[in-house]
Amino acid sequence: MNQKYWRVVAESVCVGLLIAGNLLGEAWGAENLGVTLHHQVAGLTATLITQPSPPCAGENLLRVELTNVQGQPIPHAQVRLISTQALTIPGMHSDRPQEVQATSTHVGVYEGRVHLATPGRWEVIVKVVRPGYPATEAVFYLDVQPT
Image (cartoon, rainbow, N blue to C red; front, side, top):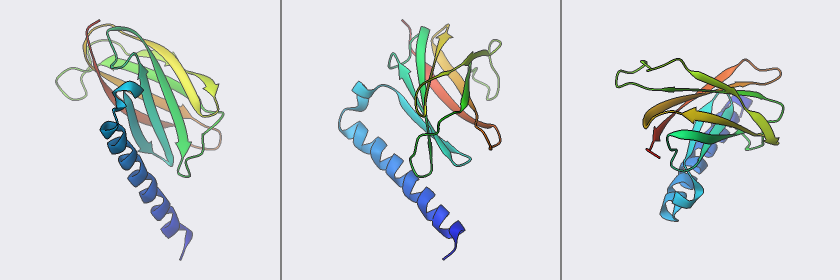
């Protein structure tokens, strides 16, 4: 069998493991782990974790964990967090986006502090630039609670 076949099999297994992990996490009380969201794009998985959890109006720490299809952390990436409050019309936003450069805290882990001014639905775009690959974006939606 060819490489393309095995790559599809590996990606399918990774997706299955992520779904199973999310289901098990919910069954075992994942509320203590914080809000954790996953997005797969262009051969990488971006996991977004918020602190506090759930995110509240005001300053929030966003942690992005980047892994490849084999589950290995992705080092040496430049990660930017772009947040804006989403309106009820898809693609519409209330104010200018806030853009923050995330810093690497561990191999494959990047953190940045964002100010989510008001409760409601917020869009967070994680822009990833890694050596030898085109720029990649993962889009997440957060339901921000009042403080």
